[in-house]
Length: 360
Image 1 (cartoon, helix red, strand yellow):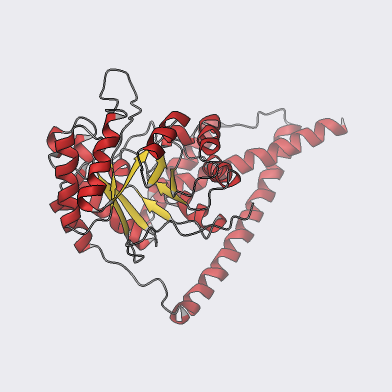
Image 2 (cartoon, rainbow, N blue to C red):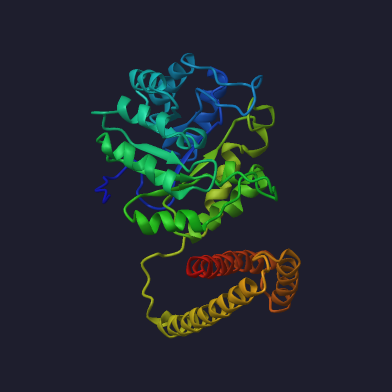
């Protein structure tokens, strides 16, 4: 579906990168909301975010103040002139937020993963002209993410944007949610007119990672940032470790390097030609490798051998990743490539096995 989207920008919001949305993870009290908003407004932030309803992983945690918090957002608008934004997960959330005059909405990762919930929100927003930003689903499923935009677009919404907040993984490393930058890059290729924001707070999970992740997002030409900011983050009722004060946020934004995205690429032509040639060689080598895999499949069939040879596969993974490290290649990068190659090799051998069985 080709989407003809409109700008999400509201009057008075600077179109230069990065467009910044900031505010606490949760609206906890009127005092906390207004103090944070005042601090952010003094730093030039134009869009204030705060969670009113908070979907928690387990019961017992702070699940948001609910409808009373919407009145605090209204006071933020009146006192600071900032636009206000909150998360919605149900049609009731939508109705209450619109009734309170909320300017922008976002759909969270736990909601994006549920097509029924997204459709309910889309139906509730029919006929409403409001910017809606959609976080990626919890798991790395690009089609599910795109499906959410298609549902909203089908309901008549044209001011849409994406928020990349990283993806959950059992294999926890330094990030709370793995960046997997290739997924939003592919989203941009598929939907080039869709603005993409980065949420370094949820991606990193700690305040120390907000700055480097924000820089990476800018280096990838993301349009904006959504950053959690709290007047007293150490005592926040939710996600305390990843929130930063307005002063720290101001510092992070001031040290960002915004690279010129419209520069000429003439000087890259020669290097890109080299890459084109290397890619062609890689494809030729992969085709040759798959031909050999099919020959192996024929041999295994003739000798009644199973396709999967686990010791051999493990040996390849370890040896090749060690070789790659000596060539300044990340072992994880090498292993990820080998896993894909192995999966295709197995598929090729299964084709040989099935063809042979049909002939018999």
